[in-house]
Length: 59
Image (tube, rainbow, N blue to C red; front, side):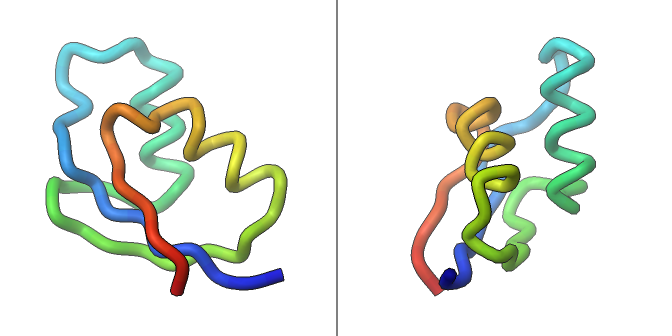
């Protein structure tokens, strides 16, 4: 499995609590922050849940 780079591009303010918690679980706290994760089904599911708030690319 490879790595995936996740960048927060939109704010979590005024979003449902489960989306805020998903951003927090991904390690994202502010707009423009980038984190790297393993390309696992769990991480991909979390990214899919907040795909309108983040951008992704292969690392």
